Image (cartoon, rainbow, N blue to C red; front, top):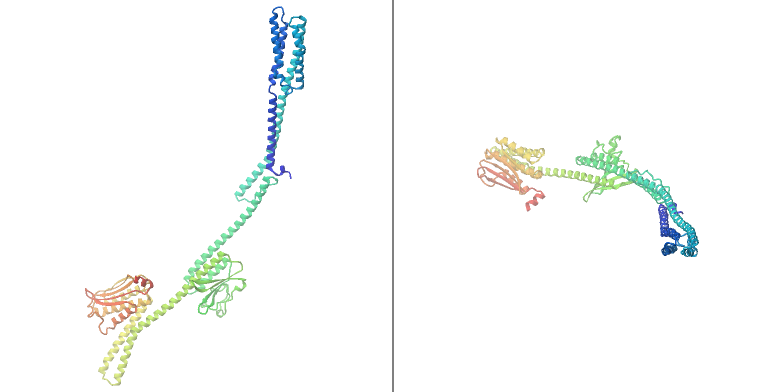
Length: 627
């Protein structure tokens, strides 16, 4: 595997190393050439000065020797010494074999040899002024100057060659580096910039939830692998997003369905609580709607009989026949809409479709520790947790409705029993006693007739019988009025108001009435006794008081109920009940039935007052009274 083809990092590093190596090589060569070029200018300068001193020696030799021989010789010696010093200068001798070419080295050696072997002896002979020697020395110096010029030319050419080589090296390095940079930029653009732009477009597309875009990833380098990974990630994200969207849609639909189911249960609960004893007509529509909404069913409702631990099916959706325990043959709540109704439905069991389903869920309907029944739900698909919670909520609503219905029925039965007990007690305390008295009077009259007692004596018994019949008839009318009031009027206040209005009309003046009692405080038995005591007291005011003012007040304070019937009549002769005054005796007996205290006494301003005080028989009020 070639790493240059499969790794972008390797290619970039290789290009950087090559370019860096070339740059380092070029700089190193430049440094070497520069170091080897040091002293070239000095060598050229010294070589050039050799021509100058050669020319000075030639000019000095050309001077006439007769003018100033010593001065001439001194000048020649100085020029010769300077020339020798320059020719042996380190700028020329130390560079030999280092930076000089072979020709330059040979030329320098030749110049040195000529100077020492040829030129110096000629100058020495020419010092004396011999014309032939001077001419010969001058000619030799001229030729020697040409050789010096050739040597200087070689030095200059050698220096220019190094500069030319350095220039060519720099140009070549620049060209190669430029080509490598061009190739690197092309490679970066083709294998780095473009793929990176594609990856950026892919990231922006993914950021905008566009998971269908794919970045071309054909290369085998890092960005190609990264592009393939990004493409795979985008595809997986697209699948995950679609799956999440579908799950969100399904959850949203399920929530809407469950909200609708809760609304159905809420509306059905109102029908259940307000439906009286008709559980079928209240629950059946709600169960059908839940079946259609939650894709379950059929649903069967059974009530549990705690006496024999049996379950009685009272309602089944999609039923073709009536339940066995149907109480209303005119009801069609549990039947299919198109199912005809016949009387034979009442004697056959319900034909539900529960057996068609392979799965059934039975949920108990309980109120506390009391099992009221069971709700059997058929289903073909598994029931979700939320649907199970909804069914539990439905069972709770059904339990509350069934429990309230049973409590209402029990309360109705208890109320009926209490009402019958009150009627029986009232008949026993009033009409039964009068009839017993009449029966005794009839037996007395029969004995008198059997003994042939005179008619005058029998007339007294007949008068007692007549009075007893009138009293019994009056008591019967009062009882009928009392029971009509307690049954026809809503509560004790309305019954007392009717009684006050009745006696206001009979007395000829309005009877004052005051009522300050919380609603639903007293039982039916207490209502009847208070009403009868009030009627008996007002009847006594009508018959015996000869009053012009009367009042009735009923108040509740400190967990006690206080009844006061007052008038401004003649008052009582005795504080206790007069002999044979059965009205007051019956009033005391009624007060004792409700554990109350009844008192009679004359008012300080005149008249009579009848006062009743007792604690209502409610647990809360009894506890308050004990505090």
